[in-house]
Length: 262
Image (tube, rainbow, N blue to C red; front, side, top):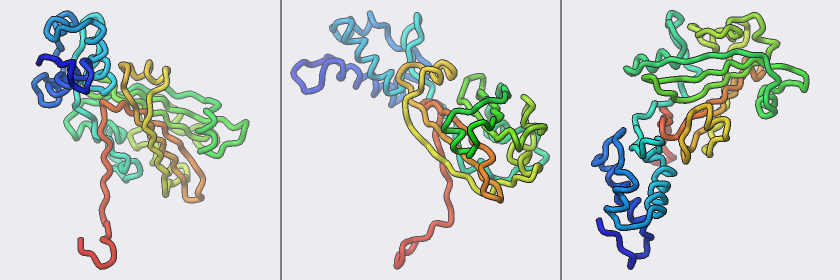
């Protein structure tokens, strides 16, 4: 494509438009390398900065990523199906793994995770959600989750120390019955949960922890679970890179408005 300086869109936008179309229609497959900056300069007859600005647009859109010093590559768009509604679903007590590992194995993926457990003075937003007093501590299970060897998302679960001390939640190992069942075994049956979802750019710490390339937005999913006494017993912070997930909600039993059929 020859770029035009007589149209309303800038030259860098025209270059980005053509490359974007090639990515979206499959001409440039996921994981393939784009032409080098020098090749694009020769192809379009433009300055290096113009090519770099065009590529930066596609990086910010999450379509390509820079792998220095090797160049730019089309991002893999095989996203994990993230289903918030499965959080409080009952699961077989005989399941050998937690919900994440079980669900992803059933989907034909190869999941794994790392787990770190510590006693902390939690961040103020978590302390507020758990309704902890100023001097109360929490236990956090910090997990990094992987699919097929690729880092997918982070999952940090906070619990009041007073209700989980001495339970398997304190151990840095997979909880095969799940944290929800472990809480229930201790007398805290979760009967409801509040979900909060925020879409934003990552903090520097999140970008480093999740190995995010520039321009990658994240969804922040916070789950606060309440027991039968309406006491908050856990607050879970999930950070989901936008290029690695599709968030799926399933709903049933929807009723049509009065006077309308389904």
